[in-house]
Amino acid sequence: MASSSANVRLERLLNLTAALLTTSRPLTSADIAERVPGYPDPTEGRATFQRAFERDKEALRDMGIPVTLIDLPGSEPVEQGYQIKRQDYVLRDPGLEADELGAIHLALAAVRLDGLPGTQALWKLGGAPEPGTGTATLAAIPSVPQLVPLFGAIAQRAPVRFSYRGGSRLVDPYRLAFSRGHWYLDGRDHDRDAPRQFRLDRVDGDVELGEPGSFERPATMPDRTAQPWELGGDEPVLARMAIDAEQARWAVDQLGPAAVAATRPDGSIVVEVAVSNRDGFRSFVLGFLDHAEVLAPPDLRDDLVAWLTGMVGG
Amino acid sequence: MARPSAGDRLRRLLAIVPWVVAADGPTVEEVCRRFNVAEDDLLADLEMVFCCGVHPFTPDSLMDVVIDEGRVWIRYAEYFDRPFRLSPDEGLALVAAGAAILAVPGADPEGALARGLRKVAGVLGVELGEDLDVRLGAVPEGVLASLRDAVEQARQVEIDYYVYGRDERTRRVVEPHSVFTAEGEWYLTGFCHLAGAERRFRVDRIAELAVLDKTFVPPRKPSAPQVFDPRPDDPRVVLDLAPRARWVAEQYPIEHAEERSGGRLRVTLVAGERAWLDRLLLRLGPHARVVDGAPAAAAEAATRVLARYSAR
Image: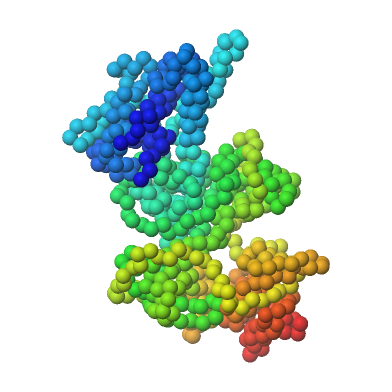
């Protein structure tokens, strides 16, 4: 059984939450001593009471319960009191259907974000609707300390300041993306007045949040699914390349079935891709070693031959 | 098991009370299952709720808990009729896990998860896919599901596997132990009959997969997933990188780096597999020079690819 002191504390925390949530005016610490049972009597030891109350208040705030400190109207000199505003407290009901909650439960079981409280989040939505499935964790996604504040900043449209590779950056944060094992932030860099991407494991120290609601996110965002050969300033050309049968499936996984222009009798394929970054395209082609060949346009093919010839001669 | 702290119990109670209030007489068993709590612990917590309420703590200002024939009702708790808001870390945990599953090929963009997640994201004030985008790595549709089934049912699989580092295809029977993602790629670990040892495979390099009827005894404790573990006797190669090729030092595990004049960087890399080194050198072209380890590798690799272009 739980120790009785833990029970006393739990009871006091529950009563304190109820008191701060139902009060029509902010409660001073004297009000709280009077209205919430379980505190040491302040008339016997003011400091003991204050310590217990401070500790409880912090416990509620750490949990995410919004305990606010408010000036009491009409008090002279100004006195302050505590309150939990209902509109700040309640979770708006997302109105989940049973199958939707079930699917979220399974997703949380399969993907774990290191150090983040997925189970508690599920409780607030109504808990696990099905018995545990025994599904092993499929993916553990690494976390960085800046992730949670940046997520909050994106939701609030608050600009952020952080230190990145030795310099201070002021950024309107648009999107967090996890790709190829790393977290990235997409946003607008104020000093450069241009969209930038930041790798979060290169952000040093804390993220400072600015005023919420300070910006609008642009309607069109850079396409995260863009391939390396599509991200560039080169004049776009449609490139054709042949890929051997044994590598064809892998190539289709990368490019999508729409890129396949022809399938030859030996199982090899011809694909077409729009290239606006020639360096990126060359790296992609050479990743196939001698299992792929650039067919057209001639200048792309010549570029590749010249690159390779340079390596042989050098 | 360590007893949860008063804070942890409060957090759980503040979720249980609203749920029970709304459910109107759920069974105690269901409450325990949903909130992952032992019946004794739940009853102890509810007994305490019974003594809680608001000033002046007269009977009508206390919450009322009734437990009857295995069912439970909570009344006079209208101030706790909703759970409290999701904190940013809870919201992120929910949305990121869901977004990751939705990005796996074959996930239904209009299925229950997608619908549920959009609702949760709406409450949090974020937009799925726009504000948060989680990609665990591209794999062919169906392969992942088949592999997970094989792991769960302890059935052997036969795979046609492309060994990237040696640029060759192999057929092998594997006892699959686990499927997981790390560093943006999906992996299968298991006992490989061809190698006679535990091996790790990249799922996107499995060209064909057949789940066999033959079962195996799963290991009691699968070895911890390890993505890159060079062996001491793997060959090393020393490269001089031009400024444009310095990214290599950030992308690959390097053993040694030394600044050279003109912004060049000299690095020592583990190059266990020749085809892996060939790809890197082909990609770097004039921006890298092999100083030690495999001096002719770049020219040889380029010559092999060039042969394809002069054959016609």
